[in-house]
Length: 104
Image (cartoon, rainbow, N blue to C red):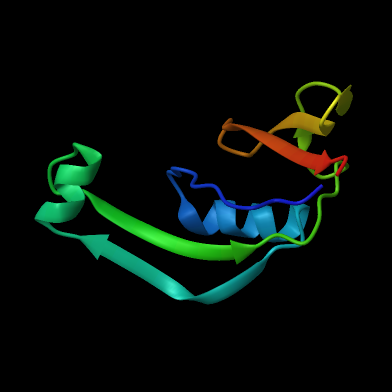
């Protein structure tokens, strides 16, 4: 399963960073970025919004450390194979983990 990109809104960015580093064996890339200003407020629709951003690389997934919401499902289609499941992080966010492998 290959993870490409996602954004997660968090109450505690450090706690969730620790979680994803432990559960998914993520590696933090670079330093934390803080984005703020009128352009961020316009984009988020939140007055005086501030975004604390950390970039994590995700090499794998250890299902014994996360709360698996459903089963890991694999479905064959004419054009390829879909594999997916959902997990719950410490803040209760439900996250889909998905991969697609083309037959070509």
